[in-house]
Image 1 (tube, rainbow, N blue to C red):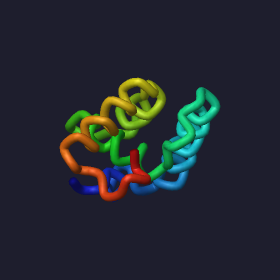
Image 2 (image 1 turned 120 degrees about the horizontal axis):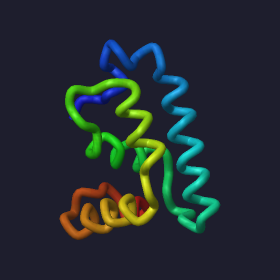
Image 3 (image 1 turned 120 degrees about the vertical axis):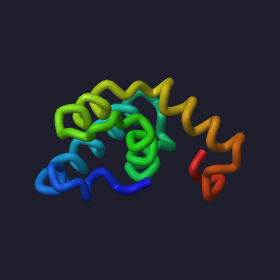
Image 4 (image 1 turned 180 degrees about the vertical axis):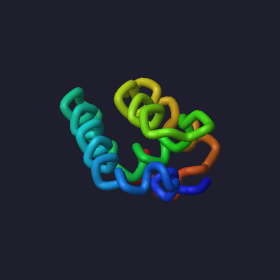
Length: 89
């Protein structure tokens, strides 16, 4: 999948979007989900993006992400063997 941050409309906001993802990951960690990292969270977000892609839709997907949905994504990926290392689980 292409990186949404390379989309012309989103490229100027890449740094702010990365900070938003870092904040969401920190929120998950405060809720006890210590194994999450920004890269795996971003991979999850990329699977949830609607088309056509726009800034407000991307921000909505990040802000509305729930730990349970992320953990389901990780679990299914592990069962399918999509994850690269056991550390990703």
